[in-house]
Length: 613
Image (cartoon, rainbow, N blue to C red):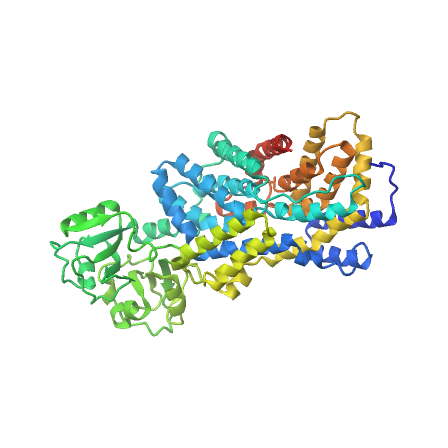
């Protein structure tokens, strides 16, 4: 490579725009997506990118793939797939906290290989909350290992993180400016980084198993975990335990009783559901009859439910074979609602209002303020007063449809319609999508959009829900910065910086040393200009450095794309920004745990890339 390349006006303009972008990102006086849009406009106005190509970033394979992964992630969320996963993890861990942490982190890492890291973290936050409330683990000990696993698991495939999605587009764009005689850079297939990702994920799991988790405090973080509703309701209302299935035998005294009569038995746990005549109902009407073979959904401690089953000659099952969909936390759960002074419910009881028959809502308890204890006995016949806090169990959709001026729901709950009955369809569509992507006969973006179309056609998602799944800030940031990478390459600015950098280095320096320097530079950039910005700016530079140093351009570019996600120390990493608040992490704690992990990450990436390339 000609290291005597002169600095042209176009190079100065592009390098100036890169510097401007970094300064604005560092000081954060202007939103990152607005900065990207301004830079895009300036590239067009200065002629650094042809006018007909300025907005091509919005139609790039990388941007379309990111949009598709966001929608696919929402499709899996709507079916309650991860809540099923939480129940499975609890069963497999057998109450051992270290095993639960290892299993949860490993599965989260594998899941993140097919969806954007922030989307995966958003899906796993309620899962982590549920696991923490069920086991007593603090979120501070659970969320950071989980977030690290999600970030590292994103490197298993070329669609797991935005930098890897961008990489193939940047490799193809670089071909237009390669020196003559240099082999064309080929896009990487879907599972090209799989060996690297597996080692990274295993490293992250081992790090927290043997070292990292000891650095995290075991403090009580209940004040910052509003999602931990189970422990809250147990503490305030005495409503606790798991849900069990009780099958009515021919010898049971419950045969012929109404559901309301069974509820009124003095030793009865909280009865929430009934399956009779092959129809399962949540909050069935009080006059519904119980017959031989009927199945009751009962919530309480294991001992309480077991004693009730023994006394009433019922068969108890800890597995929800009949009520799995009804009690999916993504679909139903416990909530609080307040009776306002203008409510028509005042003076009427739950029986008179027919909350169960008309709305599918079960009243569990009533709290009338600090001076009166919580009322749980005969609560269905209790006349309601203004200011009463009602504890309800229902489908979230029924709660959303029923809430009005008569009662105001104060518990945060999933507002979107949940479709657990579409679980198998969603998983089948997802599997077909991955198979198409693996075939390499069509671009990854088309394969992923095939899955999106399948979920929309089959009713897993509605079109408006698909639109709402898209994080437009991420899309604009990526689409607007992509032309900056093109300009770095086409103007010769990347080649100029690479050439002068090589001139300053000692002769005979091993290529792997330069690769480590590139990895550290990318990590530093990602701390201030985001992982997308770091990838777009450094990949052209890395390719030219590889050509100047006699290295493999694809290997250098892959190191950049992987290192762009190597930020476990600051909230500029979107995943860390999502967990810092709920877990109560401070900056010192993140640096103490994250810095050694970040250094290990760099060494693993460089070693594995050299081993593979």
